[in-house]
Length: 88
Image 1 (tube, rainbow, N blue to C red):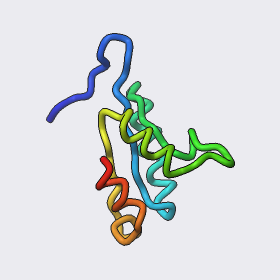
Image 2: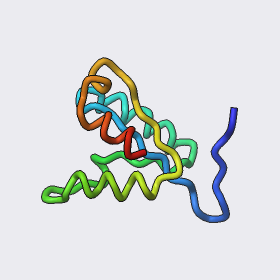
Image 3: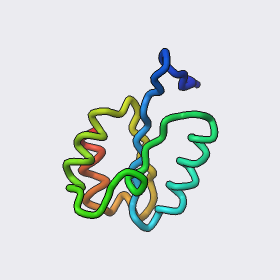
């Protein structure tokens, strides 16, 4: 199994994609990754009222070295998860 190691002083970004119904699980995963000093990205930490969500996702997907979709009954039925997976 490959391990994620920082490259010089920059840590590769990991984007977590999830359905809103799975927010608590996604947050727990992100907290676990961050406790290992990994650069995990969660939209609720970065988006602010009035931000354009679709543009944020395009930019964040492009900037991320890793894309981690959280698959569940909720996410596989959602439009946005499919859109993010196709973009990733």
